[in-house]
Amino acid sequence: MTPMSPVDVESSSADRTPSDLVAAAEEISRSNPGVPMLLLTVHDLTRQLIEEAQKAGFRGAVAKSNGTEVIEGVKTLLRNETFFRTNGEISAA
Image (cartoon, rainbow, N blue to C red; front, side, top):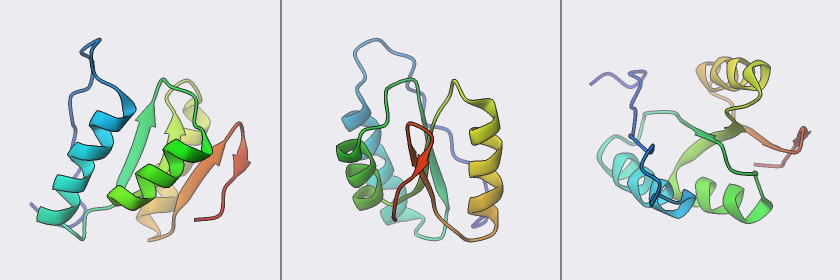
């Protein structure tokens, strides 16, 4: 896998939580530290979730419901920058 290859962690199971995805991201980050990961979630982006995501190695997080932010998040990570938003506000990374 190249450093810019997308990695998809299936999370459609009803028993999965954001914390489950954070744990999966930690594993991906350990085995592929150069891969920029963007957390796409249907859950509300709380400061706690963003902090957990950053700790796990995510370089960004957005709600799936906001297509514009998803695209902006991907572009931001491809520029080797971070992208974290809570309710439309940029969060310090």
